[in-house]
Image 1 (cartoon, one colour):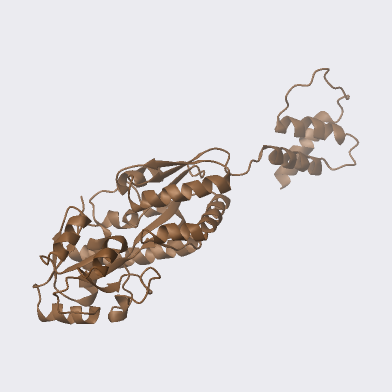
Image 2: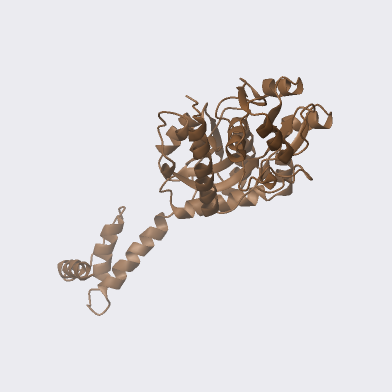
Length: 361
């Protein structure tokens, strides 16, 4: 503070004895020059503090130049067209464009590695955001090289969770998760489970089940979830963790038997269906998530604004109805809560991925 006072005193001594004169034509004047020239002139009698006027000048210029966020369109990076992340991004972008007063432009990219790479290198100014699934934090454990780290992102809000259903072919002699575990333990290696692509949610759910239940069931991967479901319906594969939307019609038709849901608590999307965790697998949770992120070091007021507006959007009844129609639950909450979920899920799934030696190169 003493150095600041000395500099101001020097400016005062330099300008206080100058005669008052104003130019005939006013020219643009910088904030610094305003403080130096006008401040010294108004304080020429030495009785009014130059320090206080200089502070007023700085405050005035700061207020004049400050602009509320956002002042231009916002880029929203997400996955390829047609998936859960894309569905979420398009609905959310419409609502946020209205509440923020600036358009959110959805930028679809193929693969979380590319999306994470772009977002991790973006300016932390709130004008590049990312909406993506839990693959963002599980992928580094399944690939030899990922060009980003999770500490390069600031969690904004946990938007949605897509539960999976544990289903079996009707011929399987198990009508509950407990019975399925007992059956698998009595016949190690005889039962198998289907999944879509390696490293996707159904695959990770199956491996988490094996890990926590201590059972030996054989993994049968398919190129697509639809192909996997068809083989379970045909009885060629006995078990599968699959999405709500794909399973419910088959369950109602009697072609599949539902045993449990993979959420931590019973899902409102599947009333009456118990959780896998309730079968003695405390802590079991495996869902496909979607969350909003900004680059790390994005200003806290920007994060808070985005969090507030997103929570407001997903609280709307019509918003929830649209998500429920495709088997997705809306979550919401604070950035800290989302960050804690990521840490808990990372700790749980990294152990499973390592134990199962899952690679998704």
